[in-house]
Image (tube, rainbow over the protein chains, first blue to last red):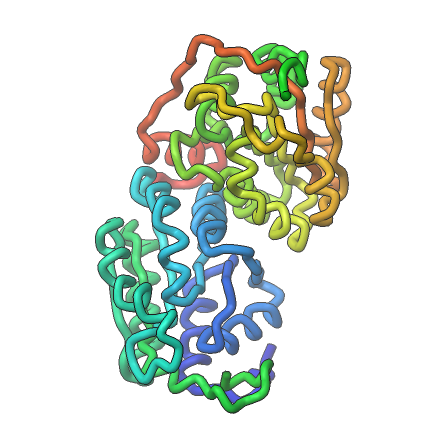
Length: 184
Length: 196
């Protein structure tokens, strides 16, 4: 738990620390390299539960179920996953569930894979159309505080919040790296 | 091709099951399962879905992990569970011992004109559940199974799925409250949680 594991950026540990100190118990996710450190840390924390999903919309339902049972939960996904969630967001809106998702952005900066671009471009708009407040992190020093702001807005204010982690923050995906390389 | 697959009366089955599981926390999937649960008697610890199709089992998972000392019952239909098939894999990985998924399987999309569904055309949800690593998965074809199923729900010693073969009846709708925030807050209140 005190071993943060393989190489990672300080802002990634800041995000994990914000979730943990914010009382988040369940972390549902479809992996992304930008979330890899947080996912590893969650699985290494006995007081947190990492829940790997087959598709992001499952995670919307999981985190709402967690709140129904009195636990704070968060959903980690990539911008492409936002598109998979759209109708399930009606669960959040209709029941006014507190909701926090952290979204690693693709298709917006130095994108090698054009297939990521349409959903990346649409992500902030789609979230807002479904009634979700959009916060964005461009600078590493803002990551922890923005996630804490999202936690307060969601679990104290009852809002639905998405924190977008910009592609520039995460850094270029290395297409020359081996599969499984944490920097990929 | 799929006629007369199930013979059970869904309302009678659900009334008997909920009657034998008074303490279970229930997530009722949209459409007929929500109507069946409501027709059996409204209860604050039943959360009725009116949308979010495909989400019932995953919602039950989040609830079951948050409330390990309570039995959680997801009561849904074949169409709803088929849309959330991946959730069975996610549940299989998490192994919540207190979660039971009961699929009222009429082999059809009952709410939209009784088109045949995948289960009516041969897909087995019980065997899918087993393949996903749930501790048990079985087809139920008799009212005699209610007591055993209620016992499993109450025992909380392994997640499982029951595929209950019901008649494809078009019954009068029995409509629970539709205000999601109300349903959420009254459910939470039964657990001693504040509204929000």
